[in-house]
Image (cartoon, rainbow, N blue to C red; front, side, top):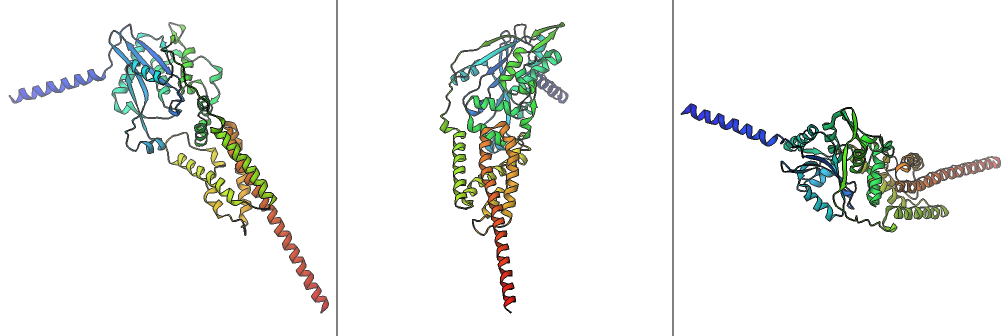
Length: 422
């Protein structure tokens, strides 16, 4: 009986292994199956401004209808917002029938386009196996999202490249080459009128965002991936064929596109501050005033931005906020140094400080003008005040030096007169 019991346990153990293997091993696709790239056009919310990509496996014979989605995150995640700020928010892969996504995006007035891939049965199976293995492995299903490098579009792109190995040839699309990550990002944000978000993101992003990229890396955006797949070809039996067999809209809807009034854009307010700064500077110059009260507001804001940029560089894992050139104008030491400056009885270091700040601002302007006119306005506001103070302090020192020489000369005259009287 003892041996019989052990034998039963052994049978149950192998049955468990077999059942586990059945659950994790992908089902064989039939000849009627298809693999489609689904592209969702950008929405009006900031997190929808870049569009979305799904990879759909459909097999009516085996009743498989799975649209794989790599852009899912859970609001119930512990310390959700802090992890989001730190760049440590886990994203995960999920799947659902395509109809569920259609209903959701149609309510948001976002069009969906299907591109049916013209690939072999074995390649379809490779794609499906890869997606299923990723989904069934918790260590692979959950990943750390990276805006430029690892997102819903790049994961789908890599899955297709894995299936087709080196048989896929991305055809050259001139307008998709020799741009930067930042330039592509700005196109999406400005097109959907996210002007304030564009300002904030352009300030926060560092040198990695300015890497000049070719078409493959530009596919981090769903729209670029769609265009690339539309033009791509694959080699089969020594013949080049288009990778996409057919392209069809899944439904028709009219996107909601409302451009905000100019008064609600950052450019309006920055222009207003720029003009006000010019007026205040002229006002201070006419009255021979330093006007540090006004500067304490401007340079405190710039310094606060600088400290935030340092945190994004050294305190987060975003990977695209490092080596931020905006630190040239958002110099962190503006805060607190500007609060030590006094209107009267100023110290000698004021002038040297503003000369240094002026040079940093000039270099910062060189970079800012390349990717954001709004940041350019912000830098020009600070330049006006920095150069005003550098000139003011220089003139003040020259006046004091001349005054000391006059006083010294008069003292010598008095001493000389007294000597003659004696």
